[in-house]
Image (tube, rainbow, N blue to C red; front, side, top):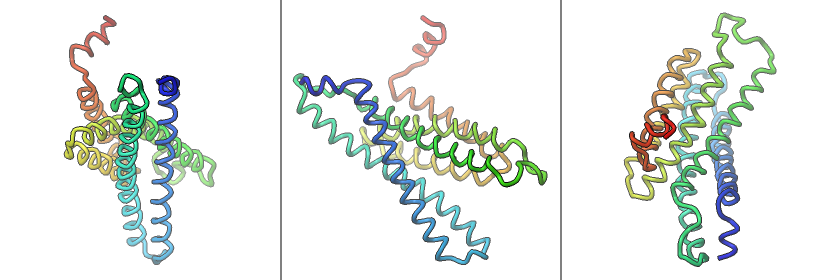
Length: 228
């Protein structure tokens, strides 16, 4: 019981966050490896084929990330059973909702960190954004896209875990479809409206959905806004 008590709250949540960040890195490594092999084994002069491989790489990466999210959920369920067995009162020191939130934040932060790394790498050059008449809003829109992905992964984590916990497979399918939609919308660039607007609309819908699944209500939201 003392051991379990020492792991409560921030320490345990930090461990879960770092563990999920590691899972995301593994999924990124595997998807990058598959895409790299496919590109090297194909004709680099065939632009249509290369674009098709890029689309395949993005879609495969999304599906692999969601597969790792499901694997992480399974591991967390096993961890909860172990914590319950060690506790004196037969209760887990952290709920599945808290685990879902922490896992989503870890996923989002790691995804956002790599997005910013790619953005900063582009900023080093060579060349200047917009020099050939392209949009000069590349860095600004990329920052907004990174922000929306961090929030979306947080909400998706809550929705995904709730679907797994209650065997609502349509919730899991909705998360996968939203993830594929947001990732696929990036191919609309440099028409940034075509990627940002759908992503933010999906974020609003996912936020409201996750809020309701977490036990929120319109009355609670009104009390929060009125500081009551």
